[in-house]
Image 1 (cartoon, rainbow, N blue to C red):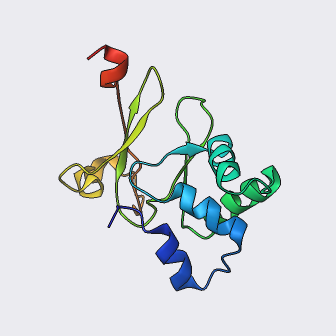
Image 2 (cartoon, rainbow, N blue to C red; image 1 turned 120 degrees about the vertical axis):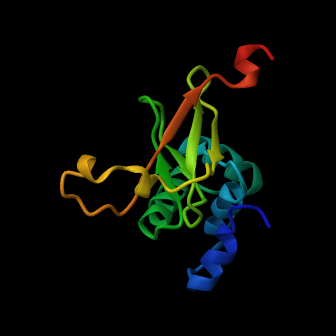
Image 3 (cartoon, one colour; image 1 turned 30 degrees about the vertical axis):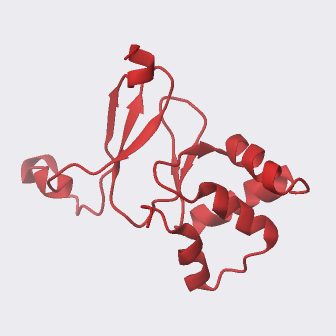
Length: 140
């Protein structure tokens, strides 16, 4: 099974899967998927020509509110939508083209923050972004 199992999760929740919602979820489902709203619209329209921009944007908003999709914003670029909301991971971002890959490094970043650096906070999560240049942009 791919890292993302978005459609199965939505079915398990009893979320009403209209044809439009199903297409948006199908477009997002998979591993290393980080599409912009316009990317989702383009791919959804290819599958279901009558789907509207408003439906795609509203569905993405609902999926984020449900906690089934994560909004990822990097360096002022358009927000991207990540269906891997239920599997802990971080992101590796190409600083040239913006390609995003999911990564799962060893260790626990919550535990790695020393007590003296927590300023009394009770930690609940970590969002780490690794940056570099992808092989395509590096010419290799």
